[in-house]
Amino acid sequence: MSKTILIVEDERILREIMKDYLLEEGFKVFEADDGKKALELFQEHEIDLIILDIMLPELDGWSICKRIRKVSNVPIIMLTARADEDDTLMGFELGADDYVTKPYSPPILLARAKRLLESRQIREQEDHTMSSNGILVHFPSRSVSADGENCSLTHTEFEMLAYLMKNKGIIITREQLITRIWGYDFVGDDRTVNSHIRNLRSKLGEHAKHIVTVVRSGYKFEEQP
Image 1 (tube, rainbow, N blue to C red):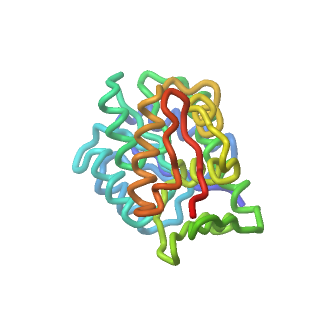
Image 2 (cartoon, helix red, strand yellow):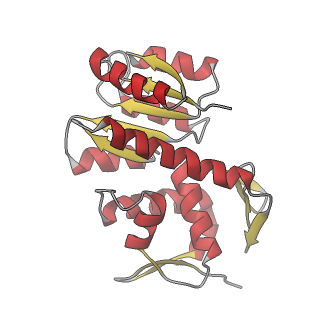
Image 3 (cartoon, helix red, strand yellow):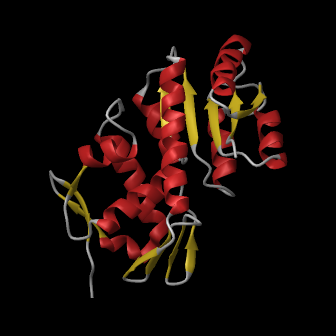
């Protein structure tokens, strides 16, 4: 079954170019030119990925991302015309999975969307769970619970936790996390990883202690009594 992508972009030409690329690849596409319409489409349809501009009429991309994250972990790629690191970190803090700065190459944006969808599909096809110290990861549903309490993780947070747990006791560098989650062409830095780890720890509550920071090295998932 083809995946459905929602493009939220108020520049018509950019929106139509991206739509044409996605349609050629067999995706189903919905499009919105303002924040209000984007939320309506998201509520009315089953969306597999969102390409979300920041500067929009009605509601900006940050507000939309924040509202969607309250109810869904759907992958979100944010677009911005500003190459500002603070903007990038703001998007990640709100739960964005990837970030692309305008002007961008449509094939590159398409490749990033495919990567997010493919990694999600691989997880959905796994038919097992993984648990440690009260944290339970269920791959088919991409759900995580801590002592029976559901933890609503974004796509990226889920991937990070699963990777760390599968390699428990092993130090994973920030560079390894970037390569694993975003790929070799990612242009972010260590602060991007730190931001996602901080969000993940916040959602795990007292179980955040199992994600240990190794100074000047990276992180590891550590089983504790």
